[in-house]
Image (cartoon, rainbow, N blue to C red; front, top):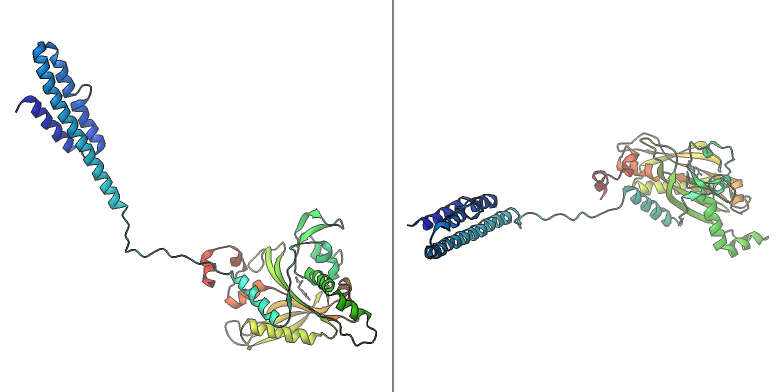
Length: 358
Ligand code: DAH
């Protein structure tokens, strides 16, 4: 075997030994580089005679081409191997279980609100929606809440940096009670003929139309602990008419609680209390007779007979229109229904908690 054939063989062996592209480029430099073996052989031809140069040059070229071909082959081989490794690593295991598509669901408080609406609708109550940014008049004054009442203080109520028409800043409603007067105005306007006919009647034969509504929604107060959140929910209730009494409140609310908790095994207690917009006023407590909460009195709502001043602010005659109002906390009802002990869990947005209600 001549010297050039040996060189080609050595090159092939060196290329075959290269296990990575970088090794191969190093090996290439030894044979084809600027100071590689082929270049050296070329330089060595300087002393040869012209005829010898030709044949020697041709032979070196053949060797060079063979080395280049070997290099190209090896490069391709390494690239193929690399691709094969990559494909193996990225291969799909079609036997793996698929990824689940997690469906969304209703928030537990939304479920409660829907439940409350369904139950009261079935009892003939309208469901009304109102603004969360409210005027001072609707939130307080119209509800017989005097200007110096503590509920108006900055400690309890969030105020907005915009003044209403009366020059008093708007507030984030601290309760849904402003919906009593707001809804009454809307309702009376919508049924103006019926209300006017009743007002004009002197014979006592025209029955006054009723106002029967609930108004669920978000409310806001400067308050935050395990049972208070700065944003929470309330549901207002109002039933006004000619002969609506505390007895009706008791029947309606008892019915509601038993339907809501799907249990007849609970009793209600009306505990005397004070609210500016009702007279007399009562807190409504419930007590389960069985189950984990049995025996404890749980406060679920404020209530009372609508104060004559509030009826007047609705534009109605308090001698004729009497009735009751209540305000309850759907968040509290949700906690009781599902046995949740920290209100903040509802508003943290943690899916580990929320997905349990799906
Ligand atoms: N607005 C009261 C509150 O936020 C709750 C309330 C009490 C509403 C008595 C009423 C009511 O309609 O009659 O504490």
